[in-house]
Length: 335
Image 1 (cartoon, rainbow, N blue to C red):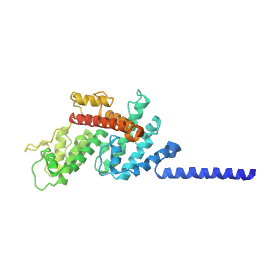
Image 2 (image 1 turned 45 degrees about the vertical axis):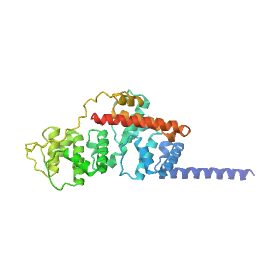
Image 3 (image 1 turned 90 degrees about the horizontal axis):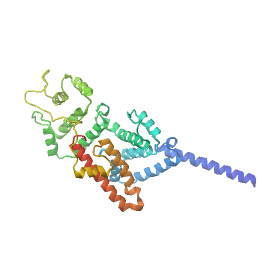
Image 4 (image 1 turned 180 degrees about the vertical axis):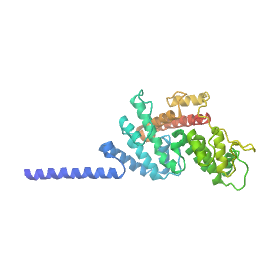
């Protein structure tokens, strides 16, 4: 009897080992690292990913927007789920592990020594989440590594999405703002392409903008506005006389966004929105995104099944406050 019992116990151990091995294989096949997260956390993420895979597109876009990321209609569902899964994994890591992830992705993280652990965690998470879009944005022709900041890349993506969704008349109106000399036969695609170039050039680091001029056989001397002027004219097929920077016909590109322009004093509604997110009215865009993401995840109705009505109301207030602040920062030239 004792031998039978021992054999049965041994068989159970083998079955458990086989079950554990299969679980790890299943999780790893989904791109969920058991070694990094531990088996319990990895299984919880697996279940959440399964849930996401059953959800409609609109739900996935809402979850993605909660991360403070721009709407990207061209992303397919698999890529959206992949990015959401990656954020779920990062959210389970300790601060030092998040820092390692930032370093592995060559993300610059500075001035965090005096911050508490939770503040470091939010900054590292924000860096990692923003990096999710980089590869896709690079494929769209947005040279993220050459821009002044990741926020610039976000703004360009949002502007390009608006252009794609705009009517032909709206695209033409925006194109006219470039002030280019009149020419026939410029279709919608060409107009959007030129607007895209302008958006990118105005946010390139100065050294990169000068490199861009040299690449187009243009002089790199002159102010930022003059360099953008020459690039626009050259890529549109107009002759740019050197050293004359701005042609005689009076072409003048739209004023470059001034990133350092102080924001106007927020009105009552905007100030209330900052308060709603627990922020000072001087908060930067990245701080607003972090606060919104933290509160949105905390109060999302799906995270509060026993208080759905109350959570839905709070979630709507948070979302409305976030949209109000971002609109305010955009008008102030900080968005």
